[in-house]
Image 1 (cartoon, helix red, strand yellow):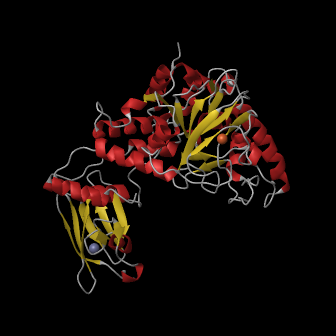
Image 2 (tube, protein in one colour):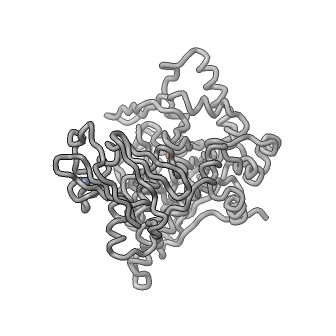
Image 3 (cartoon, protein in one colour):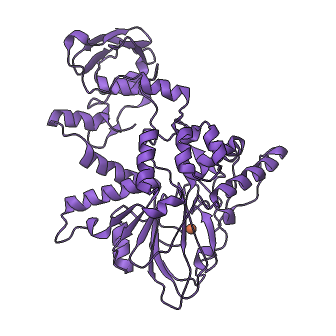
Length: 476
Ligand SMILES: [Fe+2]
Ligand SMILES: [Zn+2]
């Protein structure tokens, strides 16, 4: 049996939890497999990393917060342009003097409480240089050639992480995303409502840990069910607010609706909806799309929910049709929302696949065929042909039986979807369905997850080290 647990185990084992699917090298296995058993067969393809990432991953020293032995302190040199640090392994990091002075986080340069930079660029002398450099077991103290002989102390861990000439650490990657296909139906990610809210039997801290487990599943899989949710809009809204602020749009904040076409969007009808991401008509689509079926009494029928891991489908497309993948990553597609009176949304046109500017990873899929606008502005004539060819191949990957996960939701089960990654849709239905739900911004839910990780997963530190960590661990 290929349960998602075994898929997960396989993925973790063979991918090392680094499915760098934005740069997959197609393998013979993948090319032969088409869509037959892709999660398993993709292992081979996904496990292949680009030479640069392999080199970066294998040549790194472990990150340390201090360099304990005085005998092996890094050697420091400075000149009118740069400060150079020779590490124990012989590599040399060079930092521009301006860069180091700018990144000083002493009390004059950085507000310890607000974590904000206090120094203006105009306060950095163009000819600034170090007048003395003093290494210690924990870092280096530099005195600068400023009139006040400003001193800065940088922890070694900061200098190792910040090193850009050369980079000492691999660029950050979304290491632990687990791509899935239709086989996830056997064991989908799910958490219990009772574990997420404080009660007579669940403390505030336990409920916070519950939210961490919940959002970690959303991060790993791109969606997560919550079972045992009271079937009232009030309880559903309160649960959503455990994640963060609800994002208001022209549909309102928290929604509670039936198929009455109250708003000019197909979501408010009983038409079938093909897999799509929401808010392609926003420059910044909502990060989470959350919904809860409150009631659908007999004789009402239908309305099965469809989920598709768009990152998985994109990985298939890139493996089989790299040119199509590149086309959808390059050409900006205009989108709009024009069906509600008083609303005419025309976001910045963006490609279907958006990548992190630094790491090159796929970070967002934008796909809603219904909301697509007029193509071709700024394109070359041959781009039109290329886009239709690529979009047809993409749709084939998204609509394959392998990619589609169909589930019949019942009242009491809420679903949280990473709208930048997982597409949703539904089949047609009859009768009266009452749905409620909300959007949460991408940065907001990522922030909630990160703060919970730091609260519950960071190693304990003594007070001084904790304060230093708080100052130097932000802004990355
Ligand atoms: Fe939708
Ligand atoms: Zn300073």
